Image 1: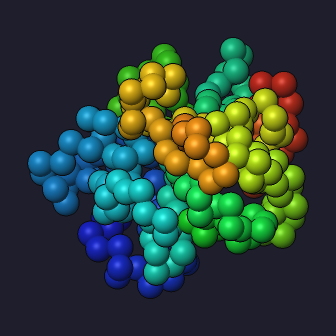
Image 2: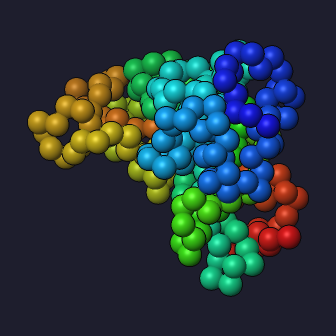
Length: 248
């Protein structure tokens, strides 16, 4: 199975999944070798993030901040996420929350619900690639464990809608700068910049918000760890326990 040289040539979700599922149970080293068979100069899995390496090297998708999904013609966003073991190494769980798209406060406030949101537009269908971040192994030995499609269906909209409405409420009150992750259950927002927000002279950490002259921090939507754990355990049909879900 070779890497995808031209993502536009993938015509259906089924074809995409057939290619993507090759990644299951492969180490990053095996994926890197497959990528180098296509591009001998590639260093995407030895330099930079694992996510960028897989998305650029295997799927041929450049890093971007586009409002549309990564694979626009199929309506699919790609997300590569790390898992971690519990101390007994008999369960897995999400290592870190998942950052989604950056929020444009001025535009977001015009939406009435999550289904109209920028989040839904970009992330309605996500191709998840989960790998095990094992601190006892070299990065090249990390194993890709799960590969599957996730859709934001009506049930998921209902679960995430209350948090989205709380975020909208703060923006409409001119308090986007006061939004805090502790206010939300599953869906929240997180900083998305390389600046210092509390430095009044740092412009790269701030953006305008409606209904207030106070600049708001540049932030993105984020799915909390607890919700990411639900996504995976539901897909596997497993019960969440302390430390994650049982490994087969």
